Length: 193
Length: 185
Image (cartoon, rainbow over all chains, first blue to last red; front, top):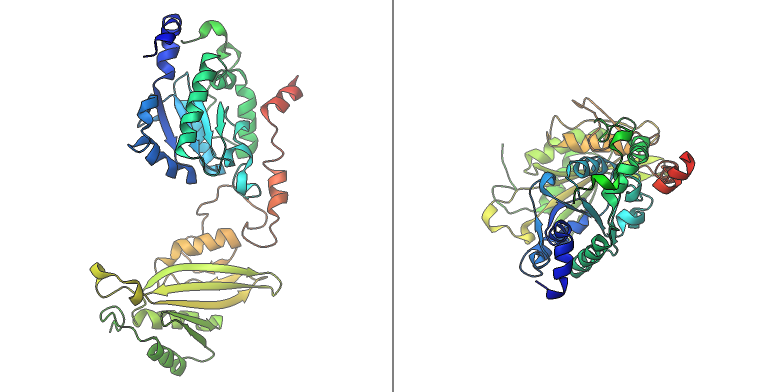
């Protein structure tokens, strides 16, 4: 452990522990998933950064969306995101979730992901190298330190707006709203960490 | 039933070409590099030709595909058949043979007969063509949507489907969260 960080650890133990142990649910949406096996295994060894893959979204706190998102996959992404316990962070991987990438005029691929779920960071590129994953993760550490990785808070705050966008795309969603109404609105006193 | 191709693993495409030309009318057969045979034919003789080739040993339907020739007002259906090798353990690229069978159907009345009676594996391919190109396969057991969830006015793989216009009207019209916030306030 870095000695310079002892004050940080004492100040906010939960946050530090949280950010150095990312449990990742890899969502194999597109071509980006091919970069994930080398980065979690010995060649690049993501566990140096505390990143390990987990089996279910209920144990995860980092959501890597790797590649283009079709409308059918978006439904699964929303359900997966809503199952993850807070605090949770989303990183979109590749250029397609940003603005559609090479699928900008596809009949079935959504053009920007952050209209439907909050995205904390993007790793641009087509495809990004495994090193870029680690650069992205270290940036995410900084954002967590500065309390700027607040996607899950925004999701609570603006849930009605996100839900409205999702319903505009899909029509009827097959599940009830995650947050019912105003009383579930996020406030700083409810902070879990 | 004799499996001239699959059992022996020795396929003489020239011989098969002579057999086909003597047995069927109106075939246009081209051979390329002794491994691929291109057959263009009328749509009426597709079923008999497919069942004949299946008996000849080409009993693997690899793909059914479709081209949209919008200027000539026709769809070109492409059936790709291949043969199982005699010795599965020693698969060699040199021995691979495939037959590409092409036919044209009208684009305005996009109807064709199903080949699921001959090849059962044709079912998902025909469903896919039905939802992507809007071709109706008569006699197909279930022509329900296969992969797409959304509904399209024009089937999305047809050439007259304006994808940029579609994207602008569906995904482009959904506001971002900031825009929606401004709208509500």
